[in-house]
Length: 351
Image 1: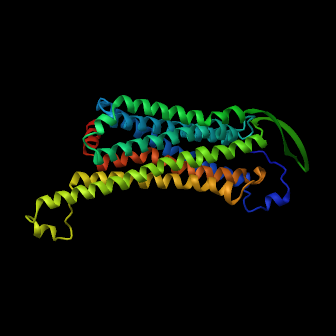
Image 2: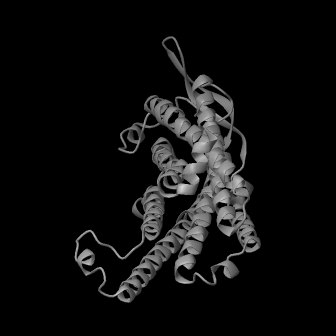
Image 3: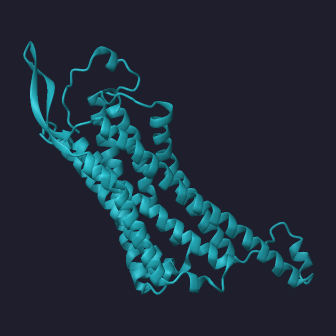
């Protein structure tokens, strides 16, 4: 972050959304560097382990290909987020650098992370769809979800979301710009000018941000969440119906057992499957809601905010959403370990 003492007017400093550079520096050290850095390292390590385990399964079908692709995407996200933390660390170590690290993070890194996170959400939706078909159409799923089709679909997803953020790099370019700042020389305060490698905000960049937030931030985020939710409900209903049919075929042989409050028609494997899908649902929802809330806050509740006022405030909100998104990069491993015996056994064999 560029720590220049910009000559804000008093009404700007009195705005409730205004956060001083001193407070922002503390936030950067605690959240951007320490918390996000720790979560990023955890995500990198956990997804390297995931990729090793899925490769050991020889990527024999579409499911393992999808899971490996998800692990690789989450690994890439965590790596970029670690770079994000390191860039902010550089801003603290070199506060008077001629490079605006805030702009570097929010242009070069943040949109790349956004594209990869969108890709991760859609790969998760594809995996959920295949799990749903395994229950609803068990005899046709292998013909529908082949390894070749899965690879092709993942390539399409990557291409689509990388293309979606390309306009940002074409319009929001970094360049050398003059900045005025206060220089204190004893009892004399003067306004001096420095050239900083940063981004120039204009009407075109603001319009592009609105378009990108609506498309990439809302539509492309909400759609995979809805797919995962629909697949989960569909699969749960199908499992319930199939268990009811099995119960009728069994007749009244186990009438005493069925009268127990702990009795369930679902098999142990079906219960694990439902827990896994529910885990993915809750994880996706918890990680996507903060980001969607921030977008709605800016473009619906308080549209047209002055960047001079909300630059630091905006960074705080987006960083909090980014930290929560980072949790999803390593939380998948917890679901695999506790709900998948094959993954758990292979994980234990690695150590």
